[in-house]
Image (cartoon, rainbow, N blue to C red; front, side):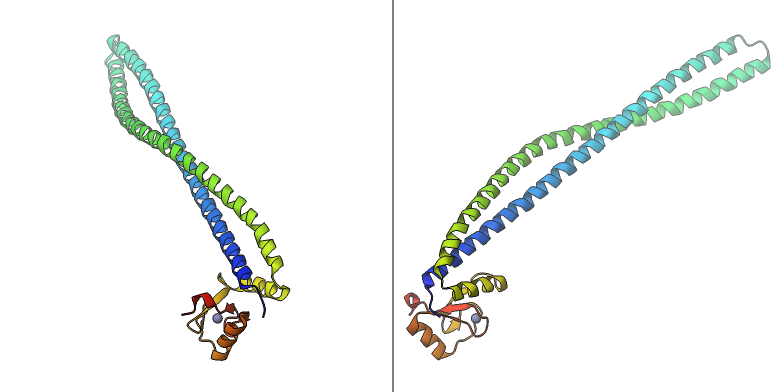
Length: 238
Ligand SMILES: [Zn+2]
């Protein structure tokens, strides 16, 4: 088949470049998605910790109120003891004082535990907030850079469409059609040189007369095995 090999190769080069640009855009999109997941996960973790911190603070406030009430009750019970007239009244007041003191003791312990926990959470929260400040700035910078790269790649890919159209117009219709079909079936390259008498695409050894003809007529043929377009590159002949 007669075809301008140079145009075919140039078209193939454009297709290759478009493919690389698409891959670059995709890689950018994947990383952008990862960054957005990281940002929302980190935000969520920070929010969980803040909620936990608020809950502990509330528990401590409630415990302190309960402690004040207990102290009041204790004061009243002690008062009752001081004015008790009968052994029965005395015993009742003493019993109440004992019970209230036990409650106060356990509430004190509980409050100490909660305050320890609050300290730990506050330290963790500070650490996480510092990390977030650093990471958020880095992620934002990376996000902007990736969006720029992706935008440029898309723009360039779009611009190459004009080249693709111009080159495709220059090819004989039959060859253009074969080229399009090959692109659907094979990864690039689909226009290949004969290398040491073999097809540069699939490596199959080609019949001698087939190679001879390619060489003499300087045209393209379909590889009998993989159906890629093969040509003989005289400039590389050794
Ligand atoms: Zn082949």
